[in-house]
Length: 334
Image 1 (cartoon, rainbow, N blue to C red):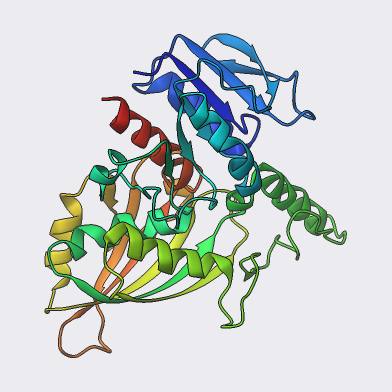
Image 2: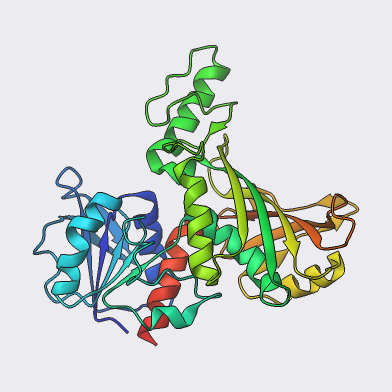
């Protein structure tokens, strides 16, 4: 196990989740260093029962560090992750900075744990929406290869950080009080509204989040032949993303077969009760490790029996970010 862990972006939503998970899982460490911007330096954050002071992130912050967990944005990762590696640390990065680098493994421990062992200092944590989708699709794909995925996401404010979650709260109160909502963190009113995921749109018309889901899934599954299309939307939910997933398989698959495979898969809980109607909900996925999968049904538009529909909810901050990274750390520390 690592003797000295550094958390970069310690004051953010994912950084705080890192700290909580370190305290409760198998990463007992003699020393934890909390790092953030100069603006956040000096803050106190409780690690277990100890109050730790946040230090300013610099290139010299990683002396003696064995493991560095990064969640401070791509620019910070590009600037400081190489310094951490040079100092001797293994880096697990939660940004998009290194995900598509051929020399950097992109890892979901339940899917491709072997890739983590091949790291050269940096391991990339996939995008939150990719992780949540892959957790539901992989157990089926490994038995009956998926040839096409169509996914629509319903992404919580948590995906844009703690400030966006606070904005949803304050806007909701303002609207209920008859006041105008004032977008500051997100580009549009998020309270009682939904809109295209707030990431750049390229010439194809796809936004960055959608492109991430396509490219990252190909890399994690090791199969570029899968046809994938995505539509990513921001919704007024505090925490936990939801996804509607339509799959086409090489061979016919029944809902009962899909349900049995998912029930026997690590990191997945099947919530699929038709009477009374109880299916995955973000409020029930929030704060738990597993992704919830339900609405498992035959796609009636594919009469050859090769289509299955799913609905998935997963905690974006937890399995979609911090937990996956901690699982990677446990994997390489074992």
